[in-house]
Length: 401
Image (cartoon, rainbow, N blue to C red; front, top):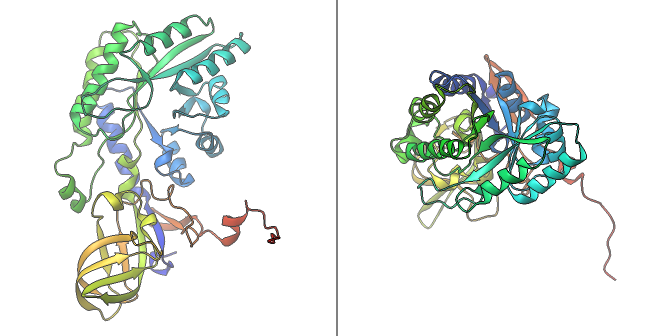
C-alpha cells in the first residue's frame, strides 16, 4: 500500500522515527542512572499498535482508568508492568493491587479501599505507591496526590504501617504543565527529601510523572523558544538519583511517564482541500478534516504544515484552513501564503498527542490511521462506520402523545 493511494482524511504514524526517539530518551537517562524505566502515557494516544510497540521496546504502560488498564492487559501487558494512576480509579484497582501492578493511590478514599482489600486477603503481601503533592516553584497548584506539607502524606504512611501485609513500594509525583529544567530539578529533589525525612530507603521506584519537552519541528521550536533536550533532563534528574543512591544498597527504579514527549511528533494528519472562497476580502480553504483531528496543539500553537500541490494552483495570501464542521472555531491553520488549489493535500505535523483520544465522532465518523514501518504502510485503525457510532444506542420508536 502506498501513501499516495490513501483516501483523505487520515493519520500516518511514522513508527521508525518513533522508535528512534523512544530509544534516545531511554539512552539519555540510562547513561547516567541505569535503573530507568519509561512508562508510556496511554491517555495521550492509546492506539493499540502504538502501545504494543512500546511494550516491544520494554516500556511499561501508564494508565489512569479501568478502560486503559483493561486495554493494557488486552495488549499483553503483565500487571507488574502497568502503572495505575489517576484520581478516580474504578473496580480494576483491586485487580491491579492483587496482581502486583504499580498502583499509586491518589487520595484517602483509595487508601481505604486498599486497606480493606489487604484485610480481606491476609495471606497476600500487597504493595502500593503514594502520589505526593508539594510545591515545585512553578506557580501551579496541582490537585493530585497527598500533601506532603500538611501531614496527609505522613498520615498515609502511618495508616499503611498498621496493616501487616501492606507496604509502600513507591512514590509518585505529577504536574504535566511544568516542563522546564528547574521544575524537574525541584521534583526529584523534593522526592529525595521525602525519602530521607521518612526513612523510605526500601522503595522500589520513584515516579516523576510526565511533562518533558520532546523533539520539535522547526516551526514549533521557534514558537516555544529554547527547550531542554533529553540529555538536559537526564543531567538534572538522573544525576540527582545517581548522586543520592550511589552509596545505597537499594537503587530504586526511576520512572517517567512520557506521552506527547515521545509520540506527538510522529503522527501527521492528511486532509484535502474541498473548496476555496473569499468573504469580504478574506480567503478560506475548506478541508475534509477538522480541528478535532489536530488536537489540543491546534489551539495552543501554529501547527507545522505543508501543502502538497496536485493541481494548477493559484497564489493566495492570508488563507485560513478551516474544517468541515459547522463550528466557527474550527480553524486549523491561519495565515497561509502560497499556491493552493482544490484537491491539494494539506499535511499537518505533530498531531499524535490528545487528538485521536479526544476526537468525538462529531457529524462524521473518525478517520483511519496508517503506520509506516520499515517502508511498509499498513492500516492500524480502519475508518469508523455509522454502525460503530450508533451501536450503543437503542433505536426505539418514540412518538409524541
